[in-house]
Image 1 (spheres, rainbow, N blue to C red):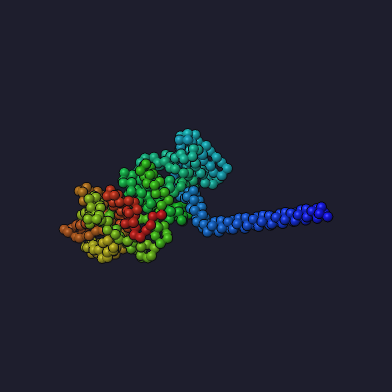
Image 2: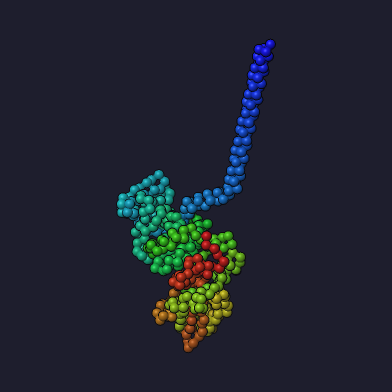
Length: 454
């Protein structure tokens, strides 16, 4: 009996032990399942948090990608290259050559020219029957010399490529190249490359802003061109590229002048009389978009003008009565007889003449805006003395519209100051400011009120 009872107790113990093992396995499985569930939930949560973080940063990422794309995509500009002296746009003959050779194409026709070999083209060239002629250098980055042209520094060479159009007057030559490379040949043509680096950088930003606005439209739509290379826009390629000018362009790469969320047209001129004037000098009504062009004084901290010692800061002209009578009649296409009096009847900001009245014994004429006034009183026949004593012959335009005029003993005495239209940046003023330690940002923000450089 005891043996039977002991045997039953063993069996019961084994049963209990088995049941406990099954229970532990069950709870272990349940714990494992719960752990897996928690891991999955945690992973999903982290994934969602990451997605939300990316979504919150997406606008910035997209903006950075857009900016990066804008930086890698070069802004191109197309420039009509004029004849010698920037006189005409139509050429009778054009000659090209490049150190590494040239390729000329028109439709399916292709011509190749070896190193230094000249490609001469005239309006009757058979290639024009297949469309425009495109001229490119064989070696990337090679300049193309246009040996049929003459510029200020001699025979000019250009970066980029060319496209030739046939017209009734001759051939139209268009140079296409990146805007930044275009500036390499604009900055030294518009400002001496020997000027201070900060002045050259200010010039580069002005030139870039002006050029950018020109690329938003076509001044020569029939040739798909934005500008030409003359003073009608910005002088391009009249002076040789210089290391200082290239450095100024590179160190301000992409930077433009902004006002009211728009890139401004940054006008500039040679020399001020100590003050600039506003846009109304051209007959333009001031508004919210052009308020960056205001009259400012270009003075040092001690009140003296930066340009006070420069030759064109002050000048004087003594014009015989007969000479001025003839010039006014010629320039205004109005017969007034013998000139009796010339008076400034309206002035603008900074003292610029906005209106003059010329009275003769046979009539009178009224002239408005600074450019027309300078043209009315300009022309050949008299001399102008600068404040340093040097004398130059008069030109088509009076040096500036900042002047006083009076009659004395059969002559008209014109006392003036500055050289140029007086709107925007004085280039010589910028250089003098740079000599005094001003940065290009400080220079630009004096001449163009309320602008940012971005």
